[in-house]
Image (cartoon, rainbow, N blue to C red; front, side, top):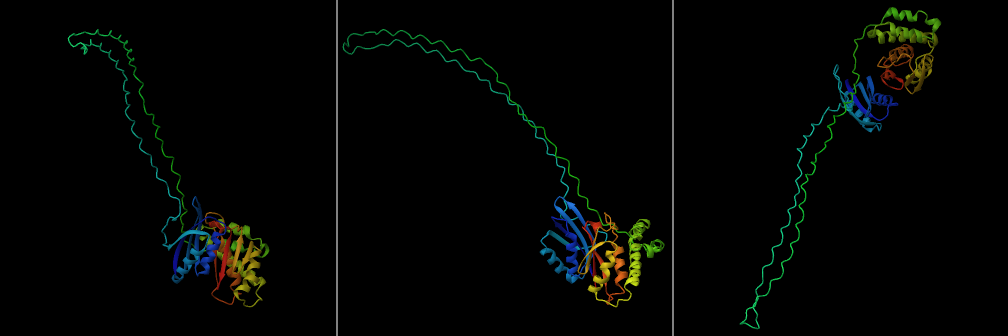
Length: 337
């Protein structure tokens, strides 16, 4: 057997864990743990499954064909190793651009207009009379033109200097806090608390099926490491008690008939459920709180004690496909032989 960690990205949360869990079960794998996280990219799903190595390709093909999964990765699961989700949002870099240096002011060139020079007076013109070549006549020179008064020189006026107004450098907005993934917390399991379980069962005959208050008291009174084992033991003993009281006269049944005639009715007396084939959907389980505080071990133990004596096969297994304490909409228990 191998253990695989499946990381997937999806757009919608509703029913995702249940459908992927069914897909894993249909391909010969059992679910070990699961987690759903809301991310700006979508829903980040992480599931650890256990099954035969030869079924890995079939599971990957089923995930690839599932239209609700945008992308996924399948990798061997290593105990104690925490792999970040491949699609989780990354923390942006806190980059602040270097401000540009201010340019040196450029002085405007002074504009000075040079006055025009006065025209030079025309010289006297000497002409030779071609009709009487012997006589030399001197033509009077024309009167000199009056010099036009020089234009007044433009006043030298310095133009204002132009400066470049640069915007003040702005700092990048503070980085968004990274999306913290809740790591898998492994608790070393302890043996069930026998005394606490006996206290729950002390008034079973008079209080059944109104036993949830006592189960909640058991959940909170035992150490965390012994909580699931104590709930499972209480479930097994209560399930066996119900079988002997109500179904001892029934002979051996196949799996489907045992679930339909014994398992579903007995579990329905405790919580709201819905049967879908060999899966029982527990809605609004009072034993399954948030942050991985699951109480599905009680329901699994209850079905083991109830169905074990009634089913002909000795290879019956009951395991949780998903739990609302890990973000699923409901708890799902799968029964197989």
